[in-house]
Length: 622
Image (cartoon, rainbow, N blue to C red; front, side, top):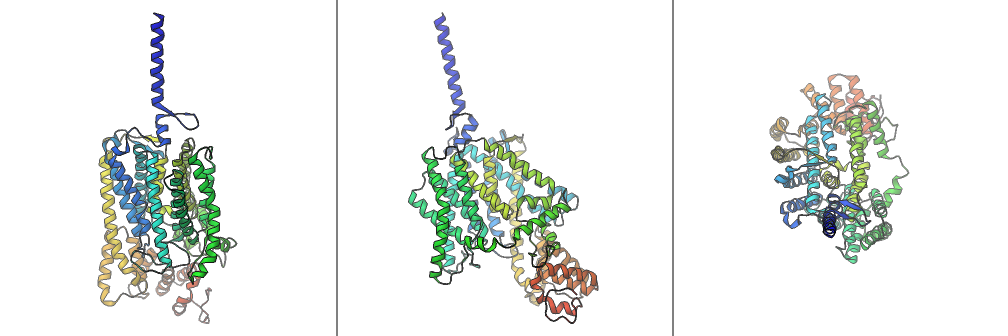
């Protein structure tokens, strides 16, 4: 009898042990993890990825979203990044169709990081209700971007759960590396002076590929380098091929002239070194070796380029080390922008100066730092936390800190696999760039950050969207795609006039069509502020319809206080006879754009805004 009891007890013990083994798995440090933690760390799922064709298709669309916008060669005024951002937005919207599956909403979980874009949307709505938003069309576009980013965070988490970390990271890393190779080829063709509709012309000594902006190009090449290091550590690339590709990427990084390049490479090394037991196995040693070689290789490449480029002729170039030593001793433009942002926050701490108003307040503060200091108005503080504090106030700053702290604390307890290193490396690049510029104001960088933040979030918020989730998503997608199509049509019309309007080259016989096009855009487009800007730039200062011209000029100046508009508004005020306001406006224009004073000197003198005895055209006040 006792033997049968002992036998039954042993059987129950074995069953319980097997159940525990099914519900948990050991990490490489011997700790027991729950089933969800084990799958999160190791990138495995009960469902085979081959049985998830919808999610796989969504992942490929996200990969294209990480590639195609960065190959776009079309950059034209008034929004040079328009088509690249359009590609990213549309591809992201199409990828969101992955979330239509019923099982997504049956047990819906929202990544905690989505509280950040949701909270910012609420703050913008509050400012709009209080009359603090001057241009509601721009606020609407901003809220669309934030909602889009929020849904991409949900999609990133969904792809990680269904496909696993490893497949997600490897697929997207390959997309970044492939795009990096294409960008290298395009940059080489630009250096060779080849002209093509597929290539954006090289306009400066710094290299920027088809992105049209050196620091954006450096950021993207750093993302490709981080992905290359990950694939090398996973043994998906041979050492020779990885070294050859890394050399090409580092060369482009050097030619970008971006000083942030050094920060990106140092961050990769520190993140690799911070991993537990960084030399414990083959994968870790591969990663550590790759990161250790990046910095000396980068330095040697720049030394070689200093010797090689002069031998190739008069190719314009400016390397990252040159910019570092040229500008490190001068007054930093960014420090002045940060000072402006802090001044705006100090005067409007609770809800900020209003969404989209940084450039106008920057114009008002121009010249406040003394003669010879940087004065040109900037549309952004070049620092994400300071920008949010300036425009949206203390609640936005607290929201940013709280959400990121929550995300980081949750991520810190996870076992650091290669996939987690890749996640942290890419987010660190975007984070460094966001502290020095504003990449997340562009949909192509915002989309990358949203997918990574959503995939990396381990603290979920449960919400019951089983009945409303799919209809709400359908409405968002339909409205989003319709909005993209409408804005594209409006932008095409606007861009066809902008250059001629700025240079006053619109012929008399074209004026009726110009006015008709602008009137249509004014009535039904989210680009209305840009229409007012083009109208204001095209008008000629005269007493005809003077009040209407002043109103239009004032609105456009509040939106984009560009040089010609700033001086022309002073002329219009003088024509009205408001000498005091005209002199004040002239002072603001001179402070912001002293280099353009000579161009307007004669006209200002005729209007009595300049002393009659002045003939030198120097920017001085009467």
